[in-house]
Length: 513
Image (tube, rainbow, N blue to C red; front, side, top):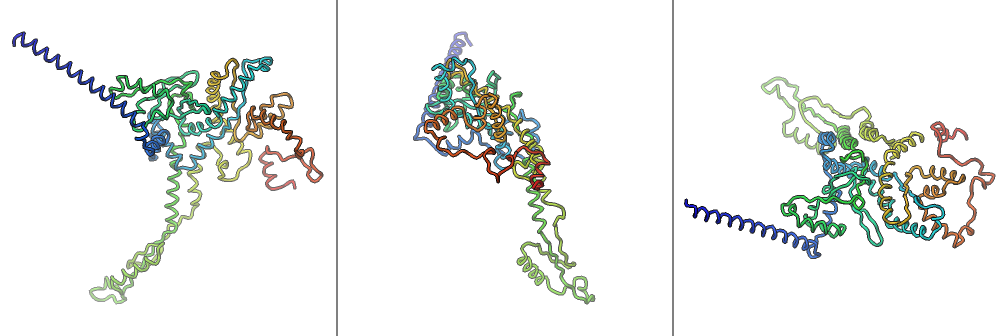
């Protein structure tokens, strides 16, 4: 081939490559424009499908999956590689095993999130200034919109099942909320002063009906940036690392980045409860099962050719009689044969109730919780209190996690003066905290402790006190009866709730009366 022809062929090949590249760019541009148009069309109300949208909302935190006992053992043995499977398994168990669900709600609601504010950079003179009072009002207004008691309690119930909860801060005129993010598109990537930080996969919004309108407006900006990237053109994931102040991660165990449910050890025991129930049902059926064997009578004459099968009734008559008996006796199995008639029963003489409760006993032993709290059986008061104290200690550290986040937000709100929120209390220590706070108040300790122990906020206490004083409500009330104003027929000190085991028995048997 001559050099002239070679140059001509090379130019032809180069032109073909250029044309292919241009065509490819056109294809990508077409796909990009199509994707944008499709996203706009899907978000248009004319294309809105409420059923599909409802399914997408449920998929954020509701994807239950059932596994066998053997499969669960394998998942639990490698939690770092099976985070998604274990989360979906825990969702299934919470829906199907009431004992597990009550444990989740017990731990998830035991913290009351009673709180009081503390000014951190103001002296006594500052606290009398209008600027300080304005800062105090800003803080209270912000807390009213945020409602930490409600939001953090909801998050706690999720955390007790999943170990982690991903959120994004949403603010409007009247409300401040923490929007739960889809778990499968969130990934922990770093640890900061505010706890863990996560990245979000923007490919979530490419699924049908995943409307951006349901998320913070910043995600529209992120999505538009994603559409301009090569990751989008190549169909790859596009992860956005979010600000931990705007996108908090609440995690039960912050010592490890892996997502491991606090109740991981109960997953297998929970499935065992179902197994024990199945065994109990089978045994209960066997207890009432009877097999009746009918003997076909024989002729006494043992002579002749038919001596070995010398039945006194024919086969048809025997079969009809057996069928009639089976029809009349539904709870028994009727069999007919030339043998002696016997009744076989499968009833077990041992304690079936003990076998049925074996699953519950193992479950609560593994949980480390006294089952009396859930109404299983009677027990002494000291034993129950010790179990409650252990349960409180198991979750109390979460107060620090929530305090760290809410105080970081408050620093952006209150201006010159800084405030710190302190959480305290559980559902079981209100009375004890209140009595301790009242005694402390007698020696000059802050009365705020007593107010918070009753489940109120300091701002509510101030408002109610001013309201009662303005309407002179106290002057209209008859003094309440106390131990100091009892009549002669009501002697004796008030009944104490803090008694020993022997004192509990004395009270039960009324030994002192």
